[in-house]
Length: 142
Image 1 (cartoon, rainbow, N blue to C red):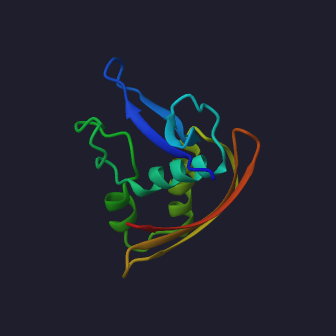
Image 2 (image 1 turned 90 degrees about the vertical axis):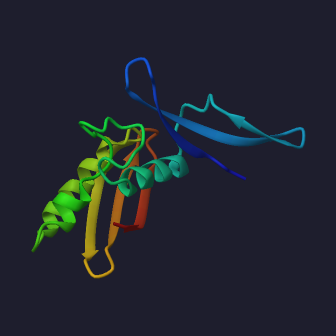
């Protein structure tokens, strides 16, 4: 059973975000958290991308409140724009996915936005840095 998960932490020394790929292993009947898992797999990449796409700009508590760098500007750039061209939304989502350090490239991406329910649907195919291909369909509450 794979219980991989991703944690994102910010170092106090230089303020940079570090990504750690953790795993839960069963050792001698006990669950053991490993922190030396440095190679992402499809599941950890999926979780990391979902976390990246789910955070509004300025929402992450460890981000710089004066100049937030993490998350997507959903309020100003997406929800605040009437007649938002779908190409513009796809560009925002593509940039966000490529900013995730597990992703090597995006082969295909399409999205839709239901303004009434504030649900964005994102379908994409990407290659993660291990060379594995990942196909995902995500629904994001924005």
